[in-house]
Image 1 (tube, rainbow, N blue to C red):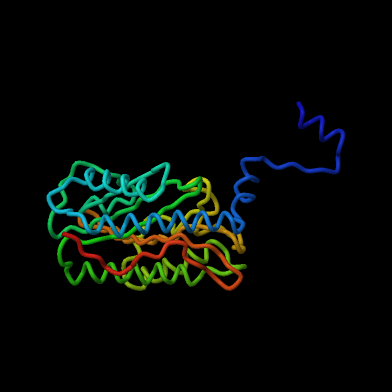
Image 2 (cartoon, one colour):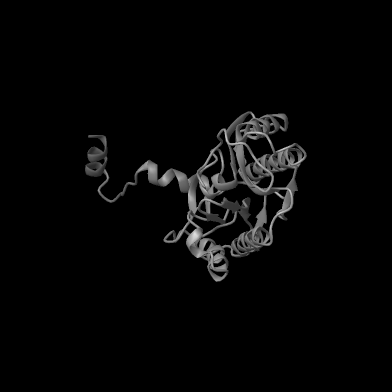
Length: 254
């Protein structure tokens, strides 16, 4: 009733749903917001550096997830949104969270964790290996790391969101693992840990300085293991800048 009244009174105007308009208004962050996002990313980095010192083998995924949540809070998060711990074959499910599976020597373990610190989000993924990895496991990790770097290098003003997805996906396809990259390359982040824009084929929204989003390609081999590497990236005038910086190299844990 109110909208029709406005249209009669102001026939030259047009209207958009707030659901559609608001996310892109939030997508571009100012310097203060970027500083808060960087601080949240640094806190998540600290949590990863501490979790890698703890034992994995012989403990349940839920035990490691509980440790991760505690570390995020120790380093300043007031809210923990998720602690994904996907060990062995569970890591081949990108949406696995935590379960009662006992982590074993020889497992790949996908660690994806984040929440809110001072009202702004963190979201980081690293994949660790319990003991020394096989040659194939190292190769898969190297391919994902190269794909993550390619996605990061594709970040620049004026590029489309789908260009980031295409760059990461091309590396994985060239290595022969294309069918095993089964999710989007990234999502926006700000006052929530998942928001527009999305780095996915078909999203032609241009990147502009101040946008922040994840770059998180992965390879998921059913029944065996998965690898994902994720950083939060912001668009600058010259390209991209990572807001979290812990190692992306293969990490072994006990």
